[in-house]
Image (cartoon, rainbow, N blue to C red; front, side, top):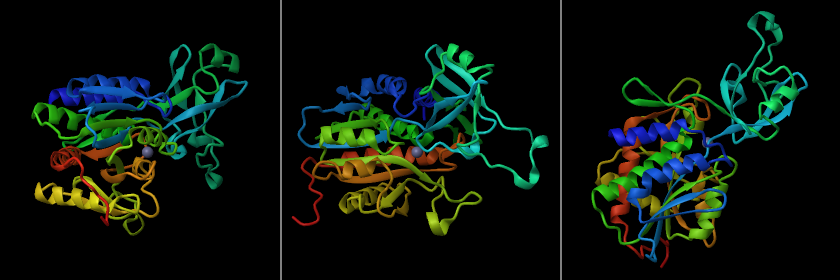
Length: 356
Ligand SMILES: [Zn+2]
């Protein structure tokens, strides 16, 4: 990762891009990849697509999702305390004592999730944090003052934590799920450009919105693009840290390489191609099985229109949907490398069907 990549990574990750409100992040992302693409498009809900060879008939997608989990202001008490609901799978357990940025009509308002002091809690029947009791305090004395500060029902609150480096090998922060994916696919575009590789097909570098509430952005853009092949990225659970269960969740470890997913939405010949490239190029990888769906944008691509040959490359990540999501730097590089090498060997017209 050179200085330019690192600056982009920190700018992109430290920006807020809540589900449904991804535009500022998409702008940062597009500005970064513009020198490496021939064209781009955005759809009405904000999915951004960088395009190489826009006229080519055979279309390949590489994909990540641009949105991050957040909270909606849902109810403001007369005393000026704010109750929230989820926008995506935000974690109530981690909320108390967190600081938030609320995006109000008059700009960003600072807030905190308050919690009663340990001294006054009844140890015998301690309440655990839930949507019923967590609340945000923005320092207002009344509902009127909250509203005067530009915060209203529907305003979005995002934890304020930013990206840091953890020891030598790790990045830690908020919403690495899946803006690390946006970073990785952008780096693939940059690498193709800098190594002057000419692709014999159309490459669509898709940064989809609204994954966290049901894979919606990918659903929309997959129907529009109707690609021949889609390689999606997302994060998956590292299961090595305390309290994870390998028997239930599988055995994945940060630092052991990209995770390749087995599941019905993953087209087996696409998966085979990913594995063969990884083996040939000596890129480490891990395996994961999912039941029914992958729970990623892969499902949206796979099951769109007439079905798109789709594969999933996941980045192992610790502590998903907390503000300390953690990934290994080598895994990030290996995902970029794997996507890059896969693209270099795809031939236009590649037919992934099982029976021909
Ligand atoms: Zn997520």
